[in-house]
Length: 271
Image (cartoon, rainbow, N blue to C red; front, top):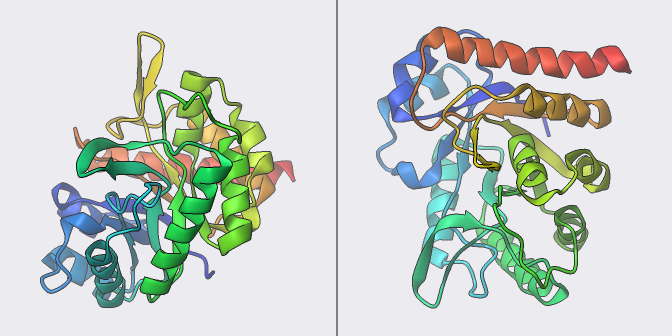
């Protein structure tokens, strides 16, 4: 995939900020927040400037037992087409079952049986989309007791079976290390990074020993250190900052993009 650079998640609250910021190379927009027939004016302006925009889904539920919704897939496809996007990204997550919505991006049970179901769901999604699909690892505060595989092993087998791309969220790896004791660097070593589409960086906070991946504050240095570790193993096509609420000043956001670039450059110095 062609290089995307360093980007930021487009939110309507940040539209003017992003339009006037220097150093933004690409964007990601939550697909459920836009209507392909009536794109926000800001996205049209930024697209006209030549910025790549990637639709990022949060509700497909590709990790559920039921096949992904044709209507949700059609929406993702329409977003990709109107944005002329090079790919679509979603989460490897469970979000609904039996007509009930979880309200969160929950981890998928990492069993062989689950892997077979998710593989078929991914293939259905790939067949319905006009561009490649990349799946994101999720943040978790619990693991399923019947898990047979690590998250990295599950993703690696899924990639081998489907060729799906990976959206590696280093903040989510950090979350799972803090909350579940899953070593983040070991996960990077086990993931098929040759299928990396791009990466996410975000901030959060700790409360009573639990890390909450809130996307509402600057990324801790430990997350940026993981980005450096990722970049020491592979050159990411792109790295994107997520910020979803409690929006800061333009200067803070620009500073976060600079911190991301510095973390990436540090990996190059170590080679």
